[in-house]
Length: 346
Image (tube, rainbow, N blue to C red; front, side, top):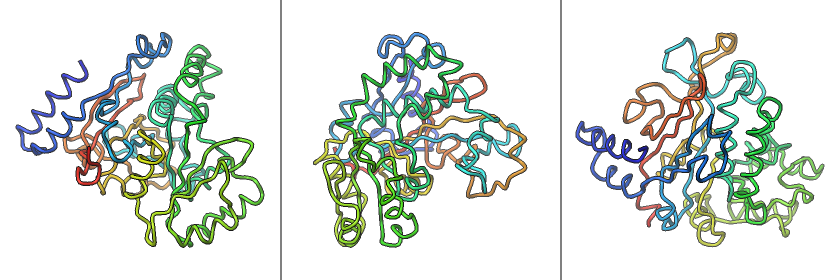
């Protein structure tokens, strides 16, 4: 049913001149992958919250790509007033962007379930972040249970199902954490060397046995590898004299076998990927308005989307809303973007 409705909407958007035939053809060719949370994931308690999970491409399509199929994951709350149609993903001046304030004071069921599933189904092979983003969250190891642990007290059966699901989908021996470092300046600003030498970066701590790929330039490699040395867990991927994300993604796909890549590098990184035609989808939990957020500055730097920005009138620039599931007063939304076929090839 999801597939039929989606394809019908694509044709309707084309008939109304909102997307061109190339976009329709590409998105139809991509097709969908739908997990039924009972039949496919064996999660009957989880199914009462979210009956299915949809990804904006079939396994067959993804297997033919020359770059990983890339998705992002965000949470955003309606800003300024109810029904404003404007969604903020962070609040200025608050640690971590004030996520719990955006969700009304606590981590909510919908976002924790949706985000946990992102980690397992899209990010089970690899997650990419910028060095600054990693350092802001350097105590984390980007595991699904960062979200799942919020479910454990009130929803233990859902937590247990997610735990079992993680054992099926996440194999740390085949997982890669990719860190993007574009310049020597990024090294100094991020303090990566200082905290690495103090063994305070969870992803680079050998005891966690996580495979890290540092995606960077020749110059950064020459400088940084003297302090953060290559090992069985740390590898450098050089794109040449200049930083070339497209080349790096091609190498990740070809040499490391990375088919799916969860982009958790922040808004600027995801927007740059989208503008290059390398970002396939965004998975966003939309939260209702919380008046407490008005005590904090919300400007254009905080805005994730506005109703009408999407090609089909949805919230995200250049996107089409693929699917939306209500979880209480939250919406678990998936948006897709046409890809740049000259870069993704298939």
